[in-house]
Image (cartoon, rainbow, N blue to C red):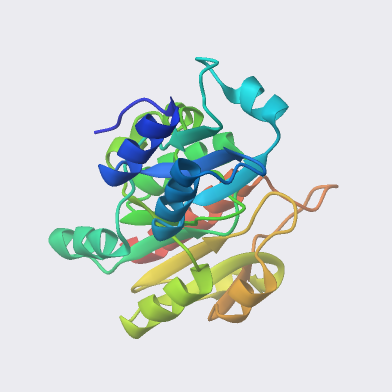
Length: 246
């Protein structure tokens, strides 16, 4: 299942974490520190495509729980990530056309947790998130998902657009949520589908949107013009569920 989100501090401990294959979400390194062990750690981090933040000593001291960080702190994911292939396999084992959530830079851990929960209840086979400019599988995400994180695989990819293109080759097509789109009830949302949800402020990024087959809007009757990302995900997911049940 999962393990607690943890900070790993000290040069040997961090290097060992990388070499043992532990999933490291972020690495914080003392800016300007160029000695051999630190260079080795940074090289390992780059090999694993880990996000590296070069920070001042004050920031490291702030992050540190042991106060013995030796200039490096790694933050391990609270849960193991899946591969995109695991998500497709999940659909295949259930004998269902794939239904995948693709999240474009969701930064709020409560939103991510709520979306994973919705994905599980709507019967989605998995969730794909980007490595950068987005929240990872933190303890807050795990808690907000109400346990769904144990059952719904979450994959982390370097490039969302590339992942979408690869999935298109496997027969999926993609619908993204955007106010300027076609009303969702007028779209055919059956078959192997990826539901793309944008971040809390800017929505779906331009390049990701250009690679979607359809743009769906949710009809709004109120005085404000946008829904929280996790609510929008829920509304669209259940329109997909409704159409799949027909």
